[in-house]
Length: 207
Ligand code: GRF
Image 1: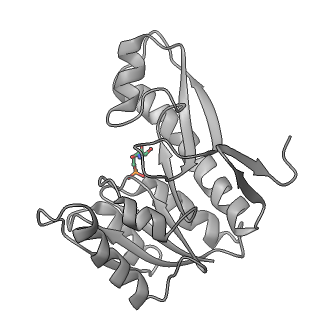
Image 2: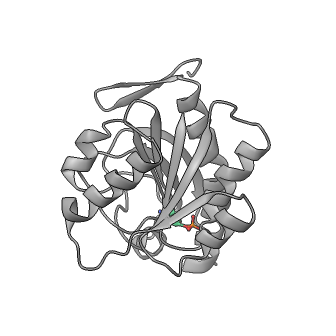
Image 3: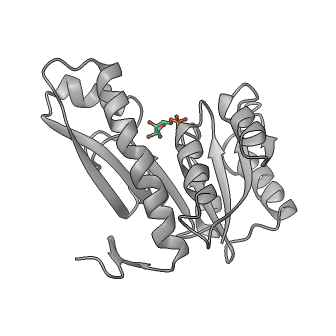
């Protein structure tokens, strides 16, 4: 399965995914492309210099929805990544994908979010959890549907919220778990052990 990883920033989840692949934890995953909407994204350098991967930048340039996403499609085609052989992994990609793109890559786009969805979707999920006074938060890997952080959940991992937590300390602890669950979810999908039934994601060998 050909992986395209879409980022906008430091790319630590991307790094965790590519490290797991390098360690041969998921032989069926073939990383092909890292794409950013921001040229200054640190993850681009990591992808090229640490992992020798192709990187591309598609600047947002005020393009909205499908106007932008059709350029993503064109790039994916250039790398021969299709809805049948590909998996699009959003890893801190700060754009919402259009319904057209999501339909084309139906059940072939996944995302990681730093909360236990459906709690605290959208931006600043860790700050939202703190401000709400939640005692437990965590992270979620989910399929992407047309909503914001609403797609079927593949894996979640909980993280306690401590009284002493700041947004930064909580984010750091959640991030450590993100780096475990995102590669795990990709491994399951590339091994064809994941089925979607309505909102439920059923994992072959799961409980
Ligand atoms: C992570 O917290 C992820 O959950 C969220 O954006 C952040 C990206 O961080 N979607 P990184 O670029 O992977 O380090």
